[in-house]
Amino acid sequence: MATLLEGVGKRTLDELDYVGSLNIQLWATLRAIRTALPFTGNRYRWKAAVREMLQIGVDALPMVGLMAACSGIILAMQGAAELRRFGAMHYVIDLVAIGFTRELGPLITAIAVSGRSGSAFAAEIGTMKVTEEIDSLRVMAFEPVEFVLAPKYLAALVAVPCLSIVSGVCGILAGGLFMFFSTHLGLILYLRYVLTSIVLKDVISGLIKSVAFATIIAQVGCLEGFRVRGGPDAVGRSTTSAVVKSTFLVIVADAVFTAIFYFTGKP
Amino acid sequence: MSIISIRDLVVEYEGRRILDGLNLDVEQGETMVLLGGSGSGKSTLLRQVLGLERPKSGSVLVRGVDVTSCSEAGLNTLRRSIGVAFQSAALFNSLTLEENVALNLREHTALAPSIIDLMVFMKLAVVGLAEFGKFYPQELSGGMKKRAAVARALALDPEILVFDEPSAGLDPIVAAELDDLILLLKEAFQTTVIVVTHELPSAFRIADRIAMLYKGTFLQVGTKDEISKSDNPRIRQFLDRVPENIAQAAGIATYLERYLQNEGAN
Image 1 (cartoon, rainbow over the protein chains, first blue to last red):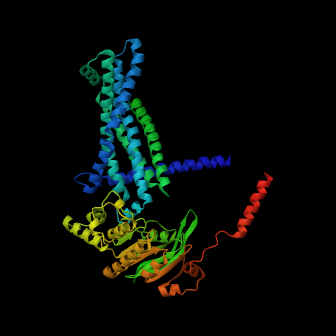
Image 2: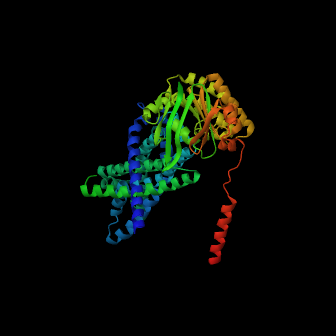
Image 3: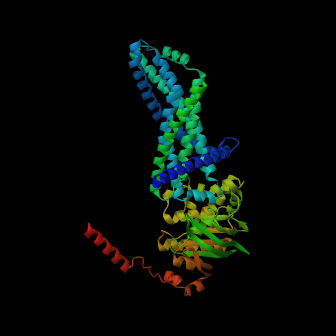
């Protein structure tokens, strides 16, 4: 019994330590992020941020677009299978449009970015730890959070919401394709219905979520990298851990935000 | 006055004592070699001097600044006067050699890009890598990477140069070339040099004084002659390359006996 309690206590302390480290790192990044801004910040950090934006955003575009299109068709088909029985096929448009704007667009993007970029952050920083590059930065009087993390975080804050919008558009267009083939509804008319079914608050709620997801992915990925101790095997473990933890936290955050928006009636 | 002064330094990791009350003074312009076997605490001591870790107790004064209690901003100011060449070279793989060397100059000085280019060329020329400026670290051999790390460490003309295991993993010829480079740099720039190593030929070639570390304490600090004539049994063991009897015959016999008894019982 004592061993069980000890185990639970140790695990709880470890988790609290992790959450505490995540918070400390987030505040340090928020303080350092101004150095990565264009015009007012350090131009080398801004260049690094732009490079990261291309890797997080542009390189992921085909994958996110395809994932969203497949999910759009799946959602439309599943919805249509039930709604057809009640003669309410037109509600498929609402389902796809609202579903992708508020929920699926940001979520699919976050899962894709977590797998691609969250793991890449952890592997890159973990390797830098193992090869003493992080120590090297520190003895060269550079702050690793400013040098490594701030550009990545800024890039994620820009790229993830942009990708979420693209993801939403792809999902909605895929739904339109399904509607065209199943009900012969023209694409222009479909898009008009889409525009009447979604409102600005749906878009805002999706964007708020995507900013939160970007924060989780960048912070968890980088923290896992910074926590690497040992050799290359530790880098592998940190990469896996970054994907698992960030995906889990993204879904938890999604549930929390959805609940807040639902109960407050705000966006 | 000593440029580095270590007093009663104690470092512990998870209750295990790694450095046990060390005292050491490094004079300006001298080459101090921290010599010792694996696990003796050499690299830990170096990390303390660089302010990368905080000790349990004691002080480390570098140019009069106590790095054990100094703020991060203060440490960063101090670190600009220290150049470090790490054991693994620790060059940034995404940058060319020129960019690696230019990084410090670009970010910590207001020099014009043309001046920085010239300085980078000079630093690379000092270590014999002037024609490799456009190469990435992964395109270089181990010895070249180490020399490139030295060029980067020299970027801001530091008062103190630190080398962590400069000869590790290099063949004897390249290692000797690196020793020559260290001697040349010391003579040319009158820099204080600290070298962490376990390579005896290298240590005795470059050192003005040697501090011999064993299990977190200094066995002796002295000149090359004093160390080579030392009658301390541990120093003699290290210098004469006498193996430690880790595997005791009696211990193995007892273990095998117990193992066979257990197997028989099962």
